[in-house]
Length: 393
Image 1: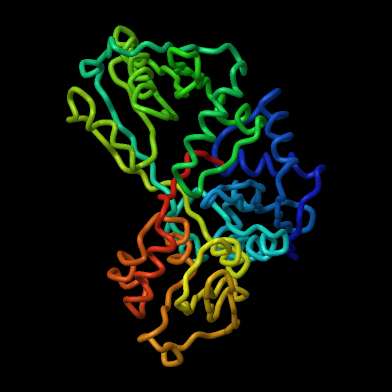
Image 2 (image 1 turned 60 degrees about the vertical axis):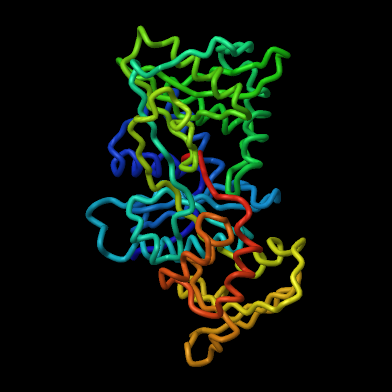
């Protein structure tokens, strides 16, 4: 008999073994201890046949920032099944249970890194972030002699507070970014031999940083964060000083980053990489928080389909910061007045509210139906910051 339940601490090693088999790696010694400690902070739903763990998924509690407000986010991580138990509907059941669990925990939003975008779209997740990879050949490195600040390579975790200050200032430009605890910085950003370099202006104020590593003849830059043009140039000077060591630099940034236009040779290779997916877990509570400081005098009615989380599905009436909701097990288009109301699904509404896509574009694409005037009002209320995400789990 197969049963689903939260695992206990004594079963964490079984969860590690399942991940090792599914994702083809082996952890030993200190690495294994660190992973076990990391997993004690997760809620892990395990699938058992008798006493054997045959599948599992993790839900990690995080916080993200939307319109300068913190939202509880549940991160889906480490979905794994032994191959002999695949194609039996187990992962489908795990996703259903994850949604129910996050509802009970009060997570307003959930993120995941997809192995298959189409699969997770069926469960209400949608793309909310891309990354841009810019490849600059060493011959195109340039050095700006007018920059008066300096770059410091700290030892270990020293100056982490400076990096954190820069990051927190930077993410105010975006929606959907994650707040980072000190432990998260240490466990993830300093992993795999990545090390930081910090730019300080001539007044010794930290204004930008990169996390990078050099693999053979490539400088891999996992984050390039700067608060002004001076710090962008100062960090690029640091990269350019490696021209005798590497043949090229691969720079990962948010997908709206256009620094390549400012290069001496803008003809560089750029690649857009679909990255993280998100979905709203508790829509009414999310809308109440999202619209609490927004004022609009014209009522907006949105019908939302969400057949995987029926507690969200129904008719929402928005007026100023008041949200009225009627739950429907089934939504019929003949019940909707498309001259006054809007119809969409949880996937589409998620990307609209986070700011990853404009609702007018999604209406043109057939993802939204309804009144054009109401769509314009909703776009003015929602598209103020672009969404992006730089972390990984």
